[in-house]
Image (cartoon, rainbow, N blue to C red; front, side):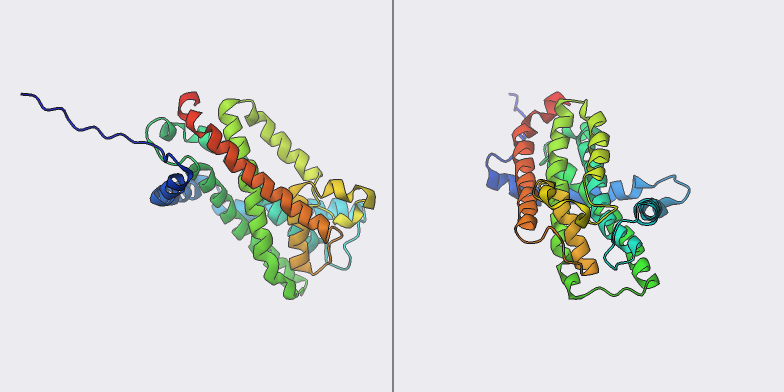
Length: 276
């Protein structure tokens, strides 16, 4: 008499509630992927983690020379390097997260085709790695503020709010691109273009005060405008020209981007293992 061996059937969460419970159950996999990416990010490089400091520092110097010394754009009494770096910090977090997140599923295709786990873990761990770089780069800002003897005002307490906005914008856009990159591999060429184009459309190297008033409503539809202006407001104490309802509009765009990113990613998640 033969006995059939019991079979273990692994199913994804059949409802949204079960799916989010699965995210918690697989939290150790999330820690492992994030820690692995952090360890290998600068492995076998000559200066290692110093790249996280060198890249934004060189970018800040170039922007300060081009926009501050040559173009003579206003800084409203704030040292121009601090003005630039206060905008560069959230932008670099966003652009790095976008690049890493968009390729995260392709880079972990071996995991997707072998075992079930909530696929949302993979792009989220990529954003966390970029957030670590963001924290390391913040040391440069502290150094600049000490060099110029620049003390932030009470508004600095609002910085976590705008950091959260940067995280949500990065996650939302990253989830869209990660899912699209699985379906259409052309997006690995599109993402660098989007990042470069977005840099020109965001107030990274200059203050939003240079934008003509008739264009500010349209300008605020860029989700990173509200994030960058919020960072500058919290760090330098400058009142943003995109204050009030335009800032709320920019925040609404960030939330819409985040929610739609999760919706589209969840919609396409069941097809990842077949397509990849």
